[in-house]
Length: 273
Image 1 (cartoon, rainbow, N blue to C red):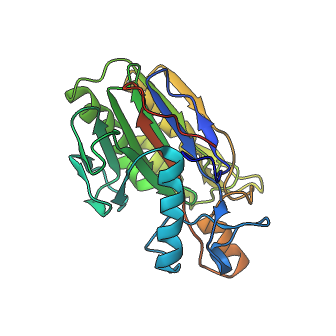
Image 2: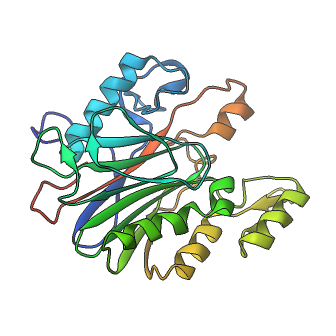
């Protein structure tokens, strides 16, 4: 955090010298009930659409912005392939989309000082952060099963390159793994036909999907050669919110953690744990 009075348990993402990114956990916030953390702190639920107290979410978002060192742009995720470019950060959502792109020097930020961060909310889907080597262009993408098939990753990379991005770095965050993501056999085969490498089997022997394998395949096809993976299964690892775990345990409600990235090429402070 900028003033050093608080910290969040962040998992750093390797995105090259021009950008800083991280993935949050459930810990470090003020949310309670099914949105709480598994440890001694309140939960760091960052989603306004899951039934949590809006005041708690607002507090959690302020904590994240303080640690990031600047404003954070959010999106209303709909499992599609629409990508939006951040033009002006107001604190409200950028609208319905599953990819956000920010260009250094191209966004009007309320503080007038720092480039905006872009964030992706998840609770089993794959959060993907991207940055070009110089940090000129950064992006966050929400890649669930539908977004993977619909091409949100390719659309995000294309939007970055249209705005001058050079060689790209990507960081794949915690998500449900192929050993835990059970789907009907017909659905597994349908996705595999469109995104090779995604078919898997669960640890209990039923059909599954490996979304991370599909993400890696699409990043490679898009020419992204520098890929970091913060490997953790959200269903198995209780540090993270998981929609499937919440359903399995009977509560149904859960929060969302995030992947967040912003440019630091202009000399701004890094994302700090």
